[in-house]
Image 1 (cartoon, one colour):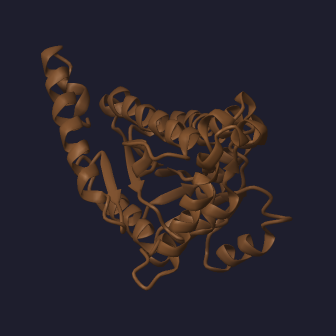
Image 2 (cartoon, one colour):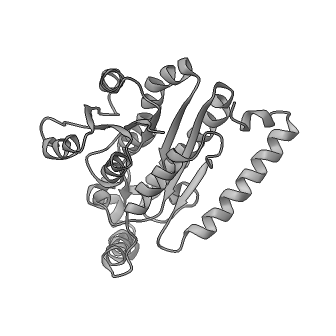
Length: 289
């Protein structure tokens, strides 16, 4: 069945690939992005030519979110699925990120998701159905050095999505996570770098660690066996086309060999959650109405 899907951050990366994939599969796509009439005009026009509705949304601004979601509802005649894809990564030693750096990152990766969910959920609750898809990361399940604030933001997103899962289940609304590994998209070209370079310099040889790690990833993403980011778009499509109540809460998408250990963490987490909820008589909150 064709779904009406609103995607944030559709101008590039996973967002653009997902929008294109859903359009080819026959779904109605409302592709949102910042500045679709100026800096992202060509990208917006390319998606529009494929049949997408284009909406300008900056998830860090309350008014932009409220106005953009209202426009999306009007242009598509409703929303069945919200994909929270907009986000940003970081690179640097954690101590060298200032509080302002952290605020900027969380405003996009975490608070932006909450803004979007709050704007869409009244519509979902009114019709007693809907799907929230949160694009997380394997780094929401473990940490890797030199990505500290990003690790933390994705761990926060995982908790946010999980809490929505249990609070919305009795209302017929699903909240799920897609957890990509590393892929060679333009995501890495817009990483937020630690702004306190003086603090970084005090780390001696370790100060060069972030640059060395990024070079290693660059080589992995440009090699013959580089994972294809289309895998993530295909995984999102599969989640959307899986029947209600059958969708997994977490979907791992990895091409660098990290997926199996994360699956083990996820399975253990689900077992622990199920056991704790049962002990407190809340197991029904894990089941979709």
